[in-house]
Image (cartoon, rainbow, N blue to C red):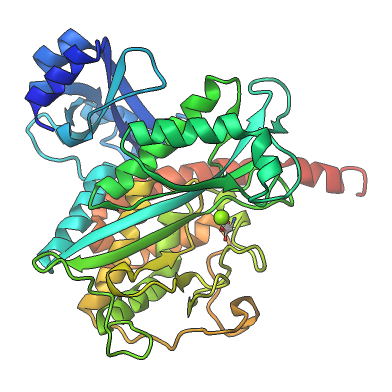
Length: 445
Ligand code: GLU
Ligand code: MG
């Protein structure tokens, strides 16, 4: 869409307000809401200022000095410049539109620590080697009733995923999700209940390049807002209920030759139909798994999901059609050959998770890392010799910072800033005495 198309759409659809939105390193969608006239005259051609200090806030909005330029620099302004391709009318909000933006310094340099810039950087590396990336995040989430009162109740009860009767109880929600997402250009492939009370899973069609992350980002924002309008709470927190299913965000993805359009993961002459390229790519994701976990599983809560016999991975494994493994190669071959990496939790920042996934795989291709044999018809959880995934955010951050190839591909400035933010969040958690400790020990000792 070019700027003229945007102006035409603003007129035709009587748009009054345009939200200029991006995703920050705390994984919070931030928006500046701009009246349509000012948007057309000023923001569309020039961008809108955004305080650089806001890129150093953690998940509780604390300023983490080490994550940003520091107070001594005065925390000047940066600029949000819109990406015209992403302009959409918002069907669930009155006379409003939404457009995604990239962060630049006032000198016109991309801000290297901004998530969309980090993913663009990795996409640029893929392109340099002749690849185009296609992918989709398969998101799971919970929707609860009683938003903003004490306690939350699930919108449907029991564990019956795919049950038509249970889905009937929440049909209005499923219908709204499918139709509204379609109207912002995200086609749903399937929407259903999942294996937790109030849990849902919605798979969407894949997107090329940056759009695959934009879709997951928009998806989360759309569902949260649509449910909020109904007095409900949709949460992509990975493990919101003790003893219940976690919410994953399995990442389906593949690489294509940018000239011929051929899927480079497929090789008809291989007994499994898998090319040498995908084997190196898989080897890269295995080699960097512990480090990339810091981006695929970015909160203290994410690590409670990675347990055996939950359909989430617990160790660094790959297999053919095997849902116990970290990487599953689904049955499709030919142009549809792709990987499903099951590591990410639903709380991931799509730009960062995808950047790390592709960076890890690309490093495997560039260094021609050898791939171990796949796990076939075996219980991967029971493989005692397999390398375990990190047990905590702290372990994952250590692994990331020790992983030079991944740090180089993602950008050292970004990794430094992200680590400072996350370590601050972790420190606050480690200082906090939990309800579990109090219940367990207070009377006992
Ligand atoms: N909820 C599981 C997870 O956390 C996935 C279930 C499924 O296979 O879709 O990864
Ligand atoms: Mg699922």
